[in-house]
Length: 118
Image 1 (tube, rainbow, N blue to C red):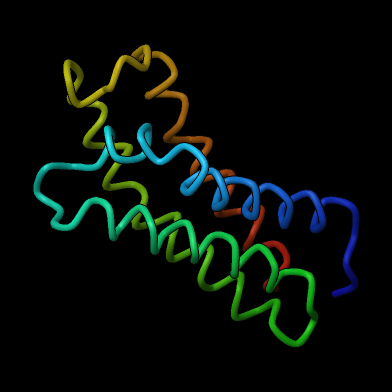
Image 2 (tube, helix red, strand yellow):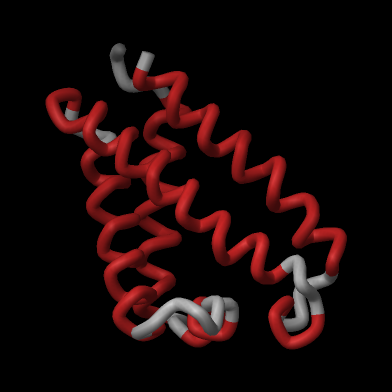
């Protein structure tokens, strides 16, 4: 499939999100579930993954691999989203309505990526 404006948008979105892991890591560290080890390393490597997967979307020969990686990453991120739904300190000050809205948004992001894989 040929690259369209929304594929470029998706690429920029993941590259930006990944870079934010390095520019402002604190919000990511605050929402990491306690049961996951090595929070700093996980934030670092997830930022690297988002940047590389976003860049990979721009190259037709790497696009399918990047899409598979994005879908896998988004599925893993459900751990964080569902953990935040516990409320209190787990929500890191994010209003509950936003936390609830993020779940269907996550499915929408997965669908958006899969559209380019098919």
